Length: 143
Image 1 (cartoon, rainbow, N blue to C red):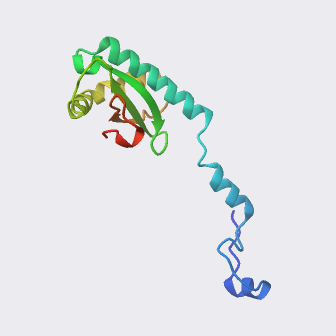
Image 2: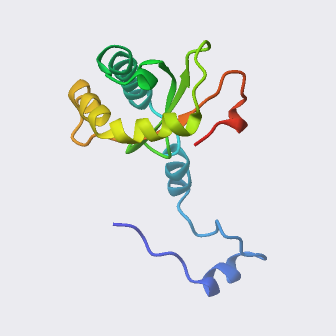
């Protein structure tokens, strides 16, 4: 059971200036900062999803546009309940990024089912896609 925060009158009587952290348990400050770290299990999940999507897109896809894609990265966005998958077309392929996103949108339910079969989690994360064009930096990616 958390303790009550001391009153502002009591804090002013004990110090010259009152700051936002005054009266807060130091363990609470450490606890909040530790939650923002990405755990080993999160990286493991991202690796499993990347491997699964690579196999599904390369082998089982009936769509030529999806078959030409390669998974560049998988990252939590903002946490493990949603994953940002960055895909890129083969360097020899000239495909429109909007067409790629539209085809991925159509196939997202099937891709999510494949991911659910490959991982052991109670809830399957949502998949959000973005396209990285060859030679583009991270700022120029189409979402």
